[in-house]
Image (cartoon, rainbow, N blue to C red):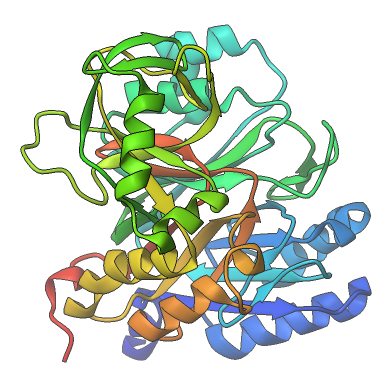
Length: 407
């Protein structure tokens, strides 16, 4: 009886990946890998991510996974590529699954489908009824369809009604039109809205958002703006400032401008010193040669502090290593989820398994699953945002284990 109690109290994660194509072989591969790791532990939470090759048979796969593994909550979605424990599968068929036994952890799944978004996102009672969050939640995990979900407004609602609570996740990818992606909630396969789960209880989470950029130049105050058009920095045109800045860059950094130019919005303008992690990174998408204004892919207000940024594979790897480095102070995570931009992978790195390789180097070969997203969800400066170009992740440990130094 005592041995059984110890078994029930132990947090266990198991991950599985397959490139099989037939449903029978997919189920056999995923189930055998998971069962070999979880043994007799009952499963509480499972997440599955499928490449678009399996869109038409997603329902069959979900039904069999639910029947055989019997997780209390099953979530997932389709993604352009999927990420397993030790590999990233791009431009080919693949499925990745992570399942967990989470003793004394409360799980509250939710879905936001075709509905009156104005009412749901604007009314506290309606929002609470839809989300049905557990008491004292630690984390929300959410996947959403980019074509049918007003994701910025959804995140604003979570930031308002659950201020300071982190959310991690991503936008389903791989489809080119509404209805093409699949979202999974238990035995349901949906094609719109969002699905997710709130977690509370005996679990600790570390949420990490690696934006893969480094600042250049100096912080600047925005003095004139029209929605997403910045017309002046400290009464100088952005184009004029950029022209001066480019002449000061090294030839190597000038070459990086071919990868695009990014701008960071300071989350806390009260900080005396701003560095990586203090900025919300957005893309510069246009320049007006006549007025000297620049256009970014986000609305911005006068008075904000910004700084230009560059991005390349070396910077992305370095940033991810830096963000993961504090994990070395503690025992290894029990498991994790990784939501990476579909512009990363081999589109960014010159080798496969770019982010997974870095994670393994820093924190070891933990059980993990994820996918390449059309946008990643994660917190910066205590608020949840939709990102591009990031590796956003959550690492799970039993409650209190983050206080115990690694041996």
